[in-house]
Length: 381
Image 1 (spheres, rainbow, N blue to C red):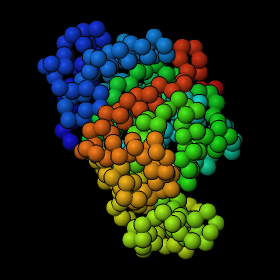
Image 2: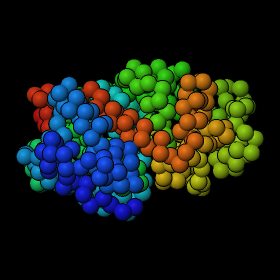
Image 3: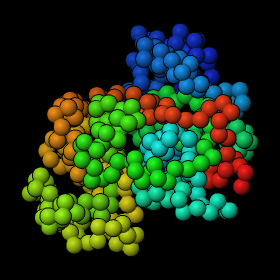
Image 4: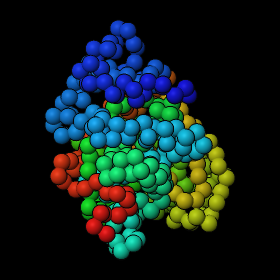
C-alpha cells in the first residue's frame, strides 16, 4: 500500500482551517476510506471531533505544542514495523480491544508484575490476556517518545495511535484519534476475566457484553470483522471439532467439508489448552481472531480489510463458535449479509466508526491517573 504522504502534516493546521482547506467536493476522502489520503470528512469528522472534544475533554492533535512530532514518531515507527512484520496490526488490534474494553482506554493492561509490582492478580495475567502480543511495540514507541518529549505522551494514547496507524498501513480505513488520555495506576484482573468475550461465547452473551460498553448490533458485527486479519490457535476450536458442549461430537452446524479440513489441520485429539510446545502447520482460511490468538498452532486469514469474513459466515465457515454465532440472531445475520454484499466498502466505513467509538470509551484525563514514564510500571515504583 502506498503510504499517504499527507497523513500528519494536515494535523498541524488549526481544526477550523482544516475543514476549510479540504472540502469533499475537491477531495474524495473520508473516515473509512483507505483508497485516498486520509483527510477528514467535513460532515462526519468535524462534528464528531468537536462533540467528542467537548464531552470527553480530549483534543485532536493534543500534543501539538507539548510534543509536536509525537504522532509522526508513532507513524514512522509503525511504518517500519508493519513493513517487516505483518502480524503487528492484528496484535495491536487485539491489544487495544482488550485494554479499552476493560475500564476504558487507560493502558491498565500494560502494567506487569515485575520490578516490585508483584501481583498475580493484575489485568495482564487474566486468562484472556495471557497470550497478548505486541506489547514490546508500545514499549519501544514509548522509549522513542521519552527521548523526544520526556513525561508527555501517555501509553494509552500510544496504543490508540499505533493501532490506527497499523490499520492504515495494512490497507485498512482511516479514522481520527483524539488524544490527551492519561494512564491508569491500577489494573483490573477480575473485570478482564469476566467481561472480555470468549471464543465460545454465544450470540446472547456477546450482545450482552458489548451492549454493556455501549455498542449496538451494527458496531458489534463491524468490530468482529477485524478477524479478517487475525489468527487463532487450534486449541480454541478443538472442542468445536470433537466435543462440542460436552457431547463428544463435533458442532453439528459446521459444514462437513469444512469440518474435515479443520480436523486435518488441527489434530482433533490435541489438548484444548493452549500450549506453546504443540506447533502445527499454518493454513489460510476465511477468518481469524486477533482478540484470542493462542501461543500455538495458528489458523489465519489474509491481510485485507474486505468482506471475506462475512462471506465465510454466510457459508457456515466461521472458525470460532463466537464468529458463526453472528448468523444465529436475525439482527446480526441481516447485518452480516449487508457487509458481505460488496467489496468491503460497507465494512471499512462501519469499522472505522466503531474503532473511533472504541478509542473513546471511558478513560482518564486532566489530573486523573498519570503519564507513565515506563508503560509497564506506575511512576511510584
